[in-house]
Length: 289
Image (cartoon, rainbow, N blue to C red):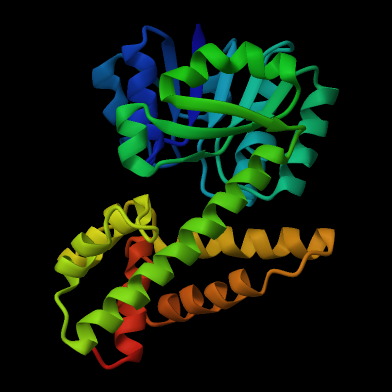
């Protein structure tokens, strides 16, 4: 299958590499071309514009920063106009559900199929092909995309257009809030004189255990905040969740609190840390290094 990937960043690079390894004809574009060029060694064809990258593609995947960037690349920089009728666009970026519905409507007028299919699992899941993929759109389009989505991990159809993005917002609410809970709890233990690493070991296997405790908790223990999923991206997702909640008349006070905490951390210069870097903001509030 001829597949185009627009956006070769932290997620796009390993996912593009998986597509190459699966034997697809892969065409790629990225605003910073050097990032896309890394995939040439794995057999991908690198293009200077998104329009060139998607020409004659059967399937186009977008992995871009936010809804504004997705809209710009698709509709302002010529990607959508260059796609052939009958092709399929899979937006694997994390954007607002209302933006996904708008994009789907515009593609429908162009006789191009559309799925919103954001992912969870981070760069590790992207590298290993173990991502959780939440898909919104028509069932027939999902079934058409499934062989490709399986290259990246486990795909689940969760509802109509926009539902994939809604599920991703739920995922990010849980991730962001749980990171805060783990950070606050471990810092409390350290302040009280306990060994953080041993506390993490002690509660492993109990009701408080989680993937967040194991992965992000370990980063906190090691003070390793190199970005896998950035603080700035986590804040963007929480704000998208709050915007969607307001749109549908839903009160989300816990998410609102954590939006404020991540925002303060970013105000204090933590934007480019991993989202487990909320630990740094909470430590600072308590006069801890």
